[in-house]
Image (cartoon, rainbow, N blue to C red; front, top):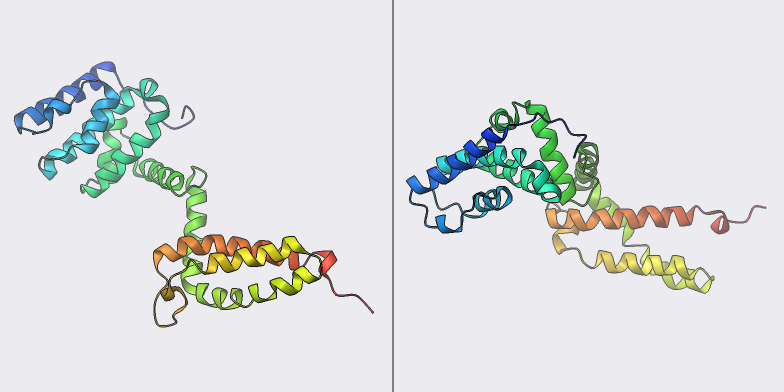
Length: 230
C-alpha cells in the first residue's frame, strides 16, 4: 500500500539478497534448488514453500526474501501484502524477533512490524485490514469464551417461537429464528457443556450466532412488535 510506512531499498540490495538466497541453497545442497528462480515473486514463493534445509538457513532466507520482496514492491503489486505476511509469520515461527524482521526492510521498528502482522491476520479473518478491527474481534472472542454458554442458553429458547411469530404475520422474523436454530445446530456438544471450554472452532461459529441475535433483538424492539399501550 502506498500509504504504508516504508523505506526505499536499492536495486543492489535486492540483487545481493537474491544472490544470498541462491548461494546459500547451493552451498547446502538444497534438493529443491532446481525450482528456484531469480524472479522476485517466484523466489519469495520458493523460500516460503521449499524449506528442506536447516532452521538457521530458513531464517536467513526469510530475512533475505523480505529484502527481495521490498525491493520489488511494484512488480509484486497485488501479491505484495500476502507474501509479506507469509514471510513475517514464518519468520516468527522460525524464531526471529520483530526487531530482526524489521532490519531487512529499512530498519522498521517492532511496532511497525507488529502492526503489519496484525493487518495480515485481520485480512485472513475476513476483517478490514487494520489492527483495530482485529483487536475488536479478539475482544469479542474473549467475551464469547467467558459468556458464550449463557448466551447460547438464552438463544436456544428463541427458535421455538418461530411458528407463533409466523402466525402473527411476521414471516421475516420467523425465518430469522429458524436460521438461528440452524446455526445453533452447527455447534459441537462441547460448546454447551458446562464442564468444557468452548472450542476455538465454535467461537468462530458463535460470532455469526451473536450477529444473528443482534438482528433478532433489533426486531424484538421494533415499534411494530411493541405491546399495545393501555
